[in-house]
Image (cartoon, rainbow, N blue to C red; front, side, top):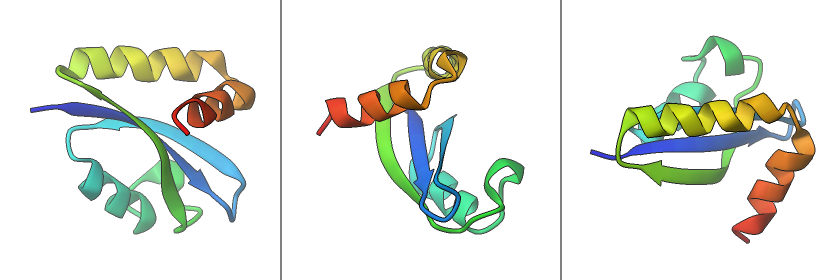
Length: 83
């Protein structure tokens, strides 16, 4: 099984959200259908970035690294780097 670190973007909120999951398709559906406290303010979340990992431990570590930056510029740099 693989795990994914992902970044979503909401045009309505002009906001990014970073998370990790084992099932990206299901998780994106839940974000857009009020299945998450953190993202329930909007229903237009789009996947803009993802990284795959073999273990949840690795994914959680990477998610934490991204969140610790607390930087929109860093997130936008990550997104543009895969372009």
